[in-house]
Length: 193
Image 1 (cartoon, helix red, strand yellow):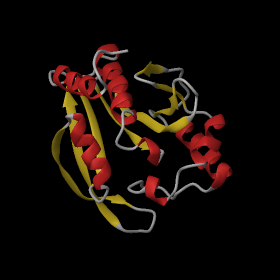
Image 2: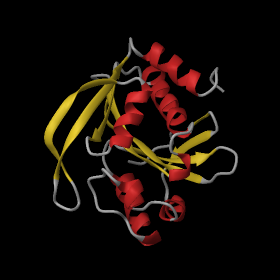
Image 3: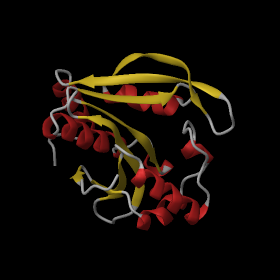
Image 4: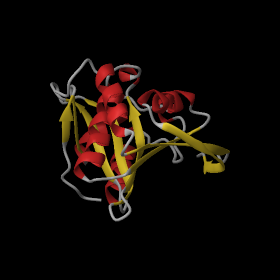
């Protein structure tokens, strides 16, 4: 879906995912980074150009490139999807980062910006996040955000190799957002910048 949403803070800048981000993504995404995704690993710049175009064409998906706010380096990508403002809900996902950014401030920074936008700009009452249960790194990252586990959907995912997987669902509700926000800001070293 074409959009102009840009979010900036905590050293990252989220901008509309575009073809010019394909080379940066192709440079670091490998099997380890792509683990838990339900589509085949894009290969090379051409593969990433096609992946970017598909993300941009997906109805209801607001695909974002994650850039270093200072250098413009592509750190990864993330998306809003399943947005329904009438009901007040959205999901956050399709998230991956270069391994050098794992375990640092990139994910909490992005999630703070996205959750703040969902709750404070769109007026959402629920933001959901999910991950393949086999992807323990992603499940742990979502847990550390302060999202509440809701359960597991069994045999919910189909991996590119044909295996079936379970999906762990989490959410943050509007009345939980202040505590989640404060936890994210504490991880990021203080006040919103």
